[in-house]
Image 1: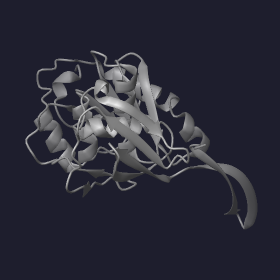
Image 2 (image 1 turned 30 degrees about the vertical axis):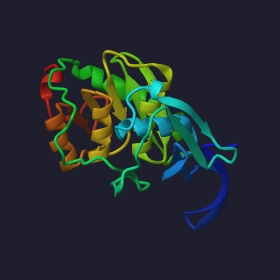
Image 3 (image 1 turned 90 degrees about the vertical axis):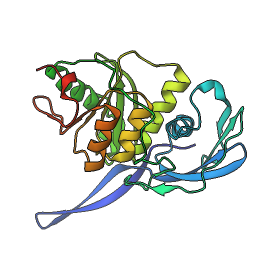
Image 4 (image 1 turned 135 degrees about the horizontal axis):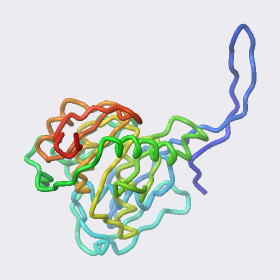
Length: 257
């Protein structure tokens, strides 16, 4: 059975002395995605919520839009493959581009193409103190991180509560898991805000856009391309978010001054 953490023992040198410790570390494992009987890609991921990871990845790549398109999804006995059967044909992309994901993410989406999503008409507004509150709730959702460290967390909020949470060694995998959990549980709140511990790179921005999220908040920095894409998609991009401060890089009108 797959588990997200593994017991380890390590030696620590400090102040001219050695100490031994028992601890847990985050698991990184290769898990293949098979679609309609054809192997597509191999995720490098933390092997939990694998069904959600597979379904969310297909959603964020534009292969599916609704859970009704999924006839069956199951993880194989050994936990190293997720088998997804759709009720329609799905052509595997001829080329996958490696992204800047920290565990080697891939996408077939042209991140420089004209976006097919626009959130400019979304007039959601939040108070500055709400941003700090959401960051605090993100910390509370980091259950696996508190046990192992070395793992990213992303959460979906309706502006007041955390609705879904996902943790993984790859930051991009957390957003695929969030998308999959949304589809599998029928959770599509009117107000959607994503908060993540991961750096906002272009593929993170694209996945947020696929979820129609008008506000994306990160504990750390955005890349130059993600800022450009946020402008094109109409997404409010917030970085370096803490309880009492944050930076708004695009579409500042959604954060009440």
